[in-house]
Image (cartoon, rainbow, N blue to C red; front, top):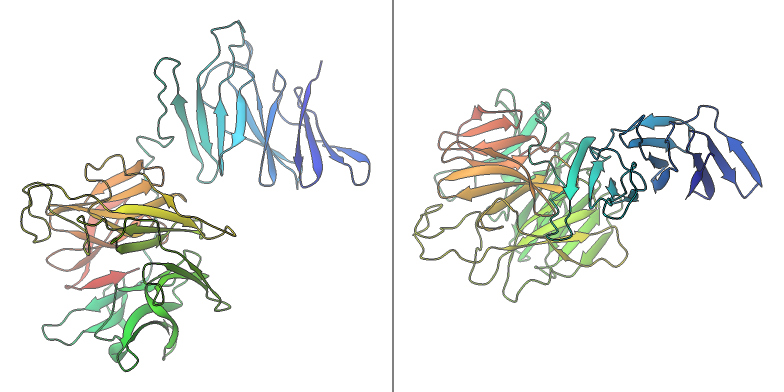
Length: 455
């Protein structure tokens, strides 16, 4: 007997039988359409879950085909594609659901016995956005334990090409602020100088647009006594003031700019760069007296992360001095100060609220000592620099607090910026500026000392 399961997609019913037959029901026109290229044979009633424009089907294995079968049906083309089988052995009647771009499989019963006590309390996650293999989760009735859901040993990063240009701030030995240069990241040669456009009162560095079309930086308009955000096109001369604020951070797709507005210095504003429209949000619900330290986007182009200091804790810098160890030139302390807090805001929601992010699991000092560099290798992650004493690491930290990967830098090195792929970094040491890749951590010198740099 062919038993079917169904799921609604865009007003149509997708029905899949355990023998691989597939049909699409169109209630608006009272008709069915059979799909000529049938799907896999599931050996048991399939379980369906809708994810975007696809229906994912799971069928239980048996003695002839013990592994669970996973496949995806494209509702637009009518084509099936095979997904990696979850590492869960032989079972049936597992539950599936869409976990925000990940497919979660949980539970089920042993195919052979189907008796009480044979129900499974574990599962797996397949990340469909980055193509990672499933990560087994486990649970026990006596001592429930669930892993973070991310690989303990992630696959080696791909060797992504370095962006062709970087922006650097050259320091000077006098009170003059120096200048911003556009630099060839291969040769270190200067391509353009922004000269006097770089004001002495620059606040919190600068940022390049993801499409390399413009440079964003903040300056003090001294006559008006306000801090302005300036957009300077890379392909032509001139610049324009686009907002009053600081901490400017363009989104990975280059369509939005997040910043701290002057009107509410601890709040958040997001500008649509095409229309100039600005949405403002209240500050994170951090303890009174906290300061916003760092700001970054996630790779989804809608989520913004802010790190705030805690009164009596880290403030104004990327590192501090844990018990008795000098850090960043600070005098030794007798106790580790409380770490800053990290908060996330989903700007795509009509009425968003801040969500507190957990402390990264592989750092004893929590978010203390972290410098946000930008989006990480996977959509729900951040690339961060972590300074401890006189050594530093580069980490990709997931928003659930797990650490996806970690790369140690040479002593007295400081990470400055990450590119759009989350795999290439600019670092500084006592000799100058260098670039490095997660796939090949050996630093490649670019030019002499710089105060700041950005991909």
